[in-house]
Image 1 (cartoon, rainbow, N blue to C red):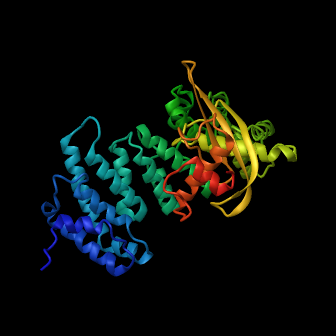
Image 2 (image 1 turned 90 degrees about the vertical axis):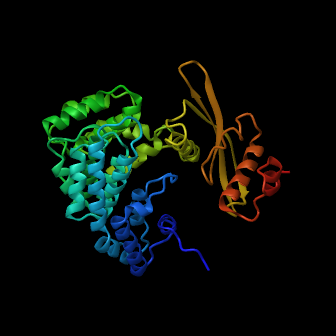
Image 3 (image 1 turned 90 degrees about the horizontal axis):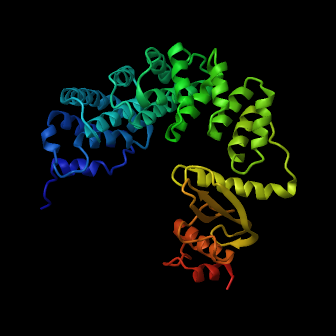
Length: 416
């Protein structure tokens, strides 16, 4: 006879279940209500996450609309009550240093409130920003992004409620990004930073010399077209040390008809380090990029693709100091089963101590750099071979060898 599951095991099981029907969601709701009535049954001192966090996670698991509707009707009121109780505990415990698991749980619940919305859910988001609840946690960006994605009208209400006074810390940055999205994509004309205090805060973001805060300056520059008086802010943004901020400021000015700013964006479209971003801005403005000789265009686009990949926060976080084409050829490429142009790009990053880091990446199929495996001193055929095997392995292709070797890749490419 099978042993009956404990409450902890039952919750762990449900955290792996897709809520793919109203009936399944109804059963999950029963579990949530039981947790509210008997939380002690679900406590597991050895668990990495709290049972509250696991209960909150159930609200992310609907895969069909009917399941989400059922959870909203039958379980969301319980989550609101559970949140209130946990918030009272958090406030009673007082300030704490370092990672705050209770605050993390509460912010997770606020994300769910943003997804499911409703009067009571939105009010809790507003109240949490006012407290403030862990004002410097990045989760605030996730919460407000989820809100504007789910229902712009709800986001407008939250933005209006937090306009005066503006919330502190990173909550203000997340609010700024949400307001910019509302203005840019949904035509909302009332911006919460279009106040004396708002412009003062934008000035502070644009003047901050800490590279870790350049993202705040970028958000500030993005708001400029939507303010009634932003002339001084434009001047500061256009002189910012980070090119991404200057480009955002140029887009903002060009959107107001500034021909010189538009010309700057077109110039940036000729530089591989800025081409991708400049092209995005120009497309939004309905303007063409700077003309480039047709024979140079593939090379420029390949370099721009590699630069953008390297600039991603999960890679180097900025454009390389040096970038050049190492090799270009047309190959039959097994991962895509077609003949195509492929490129290898050498890059180099310099630091303040005078040392540098070099590498090589590939463009033409999946843009990627095999850090520490494919090096700038290797023959190009060997690098293509490694990338070919890597890509097949990523796709789970039956042709992929178990070990990634140059020999296996050369064989696949017919470069033996």
